Image 1 (cartoon, helix red, strand yellow):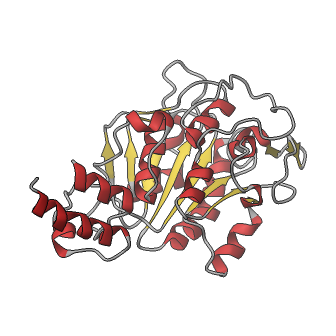
Image 2: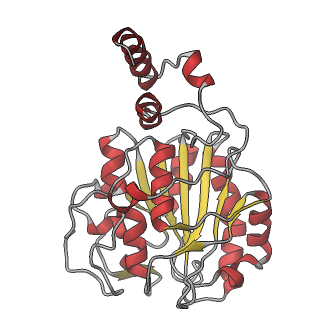
Image 3: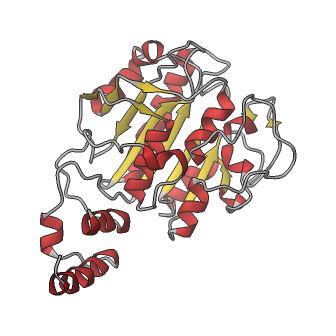
Length: 303
């Protein structure tokens, strides 16, 4: 690129980063670019295989309404390291469901810190969490379990963003839904300790409000932490919302690290840890007009 061309391109790119998007830049977005979205909600269910989950009545209706993945895999067994991997791009050496020592032992990059650094908002809504920011291992007859709340393990984020699930409806009603929200049902409603149909009914009663809350420029991801402890560790993952193709299946091999990479892309935060080497999910987006985020603009300028 000649200096004169560079002098023209840089101000345009900087303008796009600030929210003033030049027509030539928007027109140059390839169909495979990941769109920037206003809100993303990630819902995590528990301990069942792809084939077990996808035939549940309401879950099957979600699959028909969005894009599902035929080769979605968890990272390991048991539950806790998978949650940590999705949140931070690494298992952080966690190999069991044992509650970690008091405090937040890890200070590596994670979605909470990445959002705060990028000026984005985030919250984790855990069903039956006894109080905001609580570090208890279990609560409410073990319905809440800290092993399903990886944000509690990190010292470089705002723990007041760890909220009881009852706060979700309040935040939506007040127009305060964060850019990134993780929703963790309790150990009955996530299918960990109760029948699959219990979890399917919980989704029926809660998912419509989430889909409405994210709006036309939002995404809801339904996924599982792990399967039924098989070697293949195949899990159900479904992308839902207006920007996503309906009744579509993707054969892309995805893991928790792929989901993390895609979350970084849609939110406009640089990818980190294992997500940096993952290919973001590209074949699920419909014809919804896209808005480039800062990270996408940088990629377009320098590729």
